[in-house]
Length: 123
Image 1 (cartoon, helix red, strand yellow):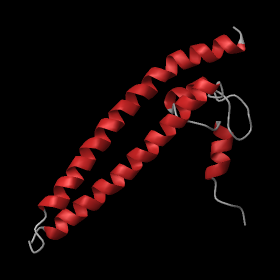
Image 2 (tube, rainbow, N blue to C red; image 1 turned 60 degrees about the vertical axis):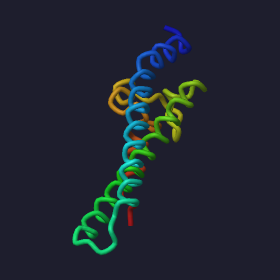
Image 3 (tube, rainbow, N blue to C red; image 1 turned 90 degrees about the vertical axis):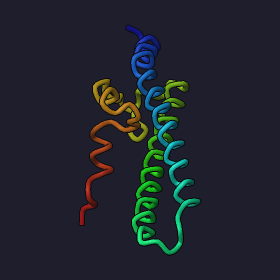
């Protein structure tokens, strides 16, 4: 199998789950934003529940940030697919194993580079 057909097969296999996850996250972010808007407009300033509502709003904001980061990673993976760079490690240029991309479709690093990046600095 040629390199171009291998990339096409990989894209065909991995693009649909990325697109589905992106759609799910977009819906989830929209719901969270609606919930935050509701909390901000319906919070009575001197109620006993104010602290709880503020805590919930903070949790929703953090979840929203996490979802946005995941969306950005998915968009980046889709762009890499379109450019033909999807199956290559951004750091070392080696191939990212298919099994890694199946487990983490937004992966941009091979396992050794990802492990090196996450390892604590040596003293």
